[in-house]
Structures are given as C-alpha cells and as structure tokens.
Amino acid sequence: MNNQNMKVVIPCCKSYEFVFLKDIIRCEGLQNYTRIYLVDGSSIVSSINIGSYKKTLKQHNFFNCHKSHLINNEHILRYHKDGEVEMVDESRIPVARRRKDLFFSEIIGNMSLA
Image: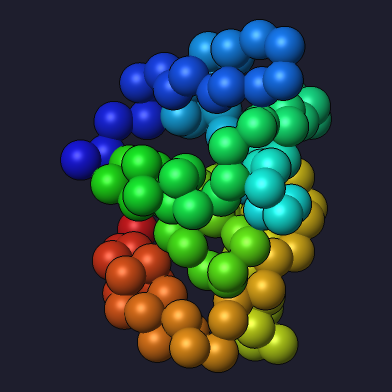
C-alpha cells in the first residue's frame, strides 16, 4: 500500500506529532530513539526505536537501506555508485552491502524511464 497522503502519529517525549507520510524524507535510528527528517528542513526525535518504524512504514513505500536508516522512496534524488543514496535534502545515506541487490530490484528496477 502506497498512500503518502496518510498521516502517521509520532510519539515524542512531550507530545504526539501528526505528520503526513509524504513529508518524511528519512528516519535515522539513535539507540532507543529515532530522528525523523522532514521536507521543511526540520526534524523530530521520536521516543520509539527505528525497528517499529521499519515494520510500519515498509508497506508505505519506505526502504530499509541500512540498519539505522529508513528512507522514503518518494524523496530519493540519486544513487551514487559508491553505495550511497542522496535524498532531496542533500543527505547521503549508505546502502548496506547486504541490501544493495534488494535496493536495485525494488527501487531502481521499479522505476521506469519517462
């Protein structure tokens, strides 16, 4: 299911943030917390670990490219041959060697030339 117009509830230390999936660029695991980077340049630190986000967001067009990184496929700008994905916020995220084939088959293989 790819419904980027859905909202997700992100539990933080003092609040619950309601964010559209399409506004999430990527998630980065920070031990027991997760930093969520948004298209407006801000970020949210969630009190939930990245494993929970991986389970939830995988079905919404997110890809687990590394043990501590989850990326929104809608915000990929380019793949560098050194094994990194560049996102629209100019961040470069490593693609784990074990996930490189899956990245090519799921992400690059599903993209069509216009």
